[in-house]
Length: 162
Length: 121
Image 1 (tube, rainbow over the protein chains, first blue to last red):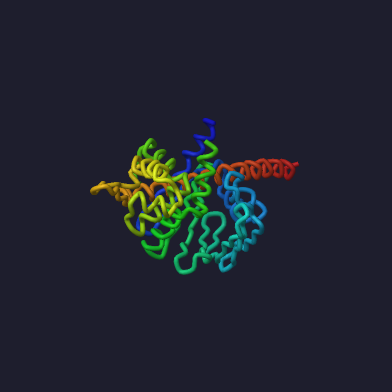
Image 2 (cartoon, rainbow over the protein chains, first blue to last red):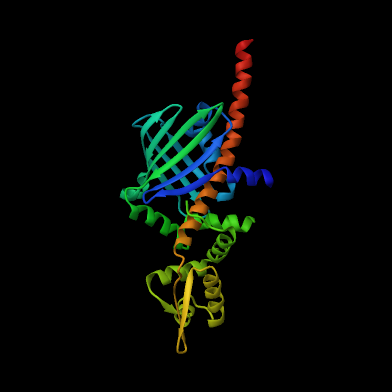
């Protein structure tokens, strides 16, 4: 439990500005290894949806090249499958990944992940830039007040697990 | 970063962990309502709805005001808590993912070590 708490606190998240969310975490491995786990579909599928989420990955296609695309199909319980897809605007192994989140239409964010290696460890910074303050507010509001939202389903699961 | 106390956040989470209470917040986001209105809308007894509103009020998510015999509910002074709670849930989601990612990475590291040794042979 203590070890879990410790690892939990290693992940930081903040709303950095009106349009940006940033998540950071350090991994005990060189950048090329962390990068590999983000870009190879068979590895990506193993960590993207932990059991506690109650979300099953039905399919996962990743073409991690600049200009390539990705498509992820997931299902939460008995709900109808949700699709997440977009394009890679930049893929620079092992230090940088930039992709679009096209399932949200015009309100979708652009995600930039950087992998910065220092003394064999990797600082990962995930940066989500929304097209406007309103788009990020809407993303937060839909997760904050909607009884059916995925985020709160997960929050419920977390609370139940306490 | 928005600062918050854990106790306050816990109260917000507890308040938001119930579907009816989230529905009440959604409703109050559109318009203020009396407890009687809310009880009707959510097919509950007045007493049941009073309890839900009390939990939301305790968490600062809802404010109530009694005028005559009617208690009116509106969204509370701490709207920001919505965002704080969302970001905390978001952070926890990533923390859970990254714990899994640690496992995958540890395995890749072990494999690289073994492969490296084999290459040297």
